Image (tube, rainbow, N blue to C red; front, side, top):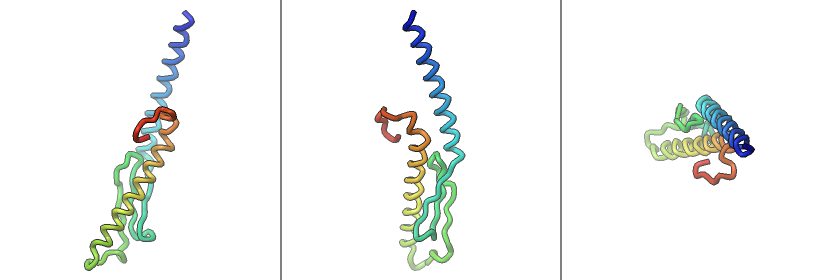
Length: 105
């Protein structure tokens, strides 16, 4: 009988963890980060679910004769935002996956 009590406690802990994880995932949906490049001339806003929400490009950086530079700045800003989004996810979800060695967490 003693083993059943431990099993029930484990099940309760697992259910609480699932509930906490779902709450953290919902919170991530509401959070966003901003990546920048070119000293803030290009900004990209990404959600905690890694969806690009906005791209802001300063008029000064738009040069029809140098499209390559603008493309590089946009890519750099996206990569910066994605790194920040990864960190946000790790901060929010890492406690649930600590010690499990799961890819992506």
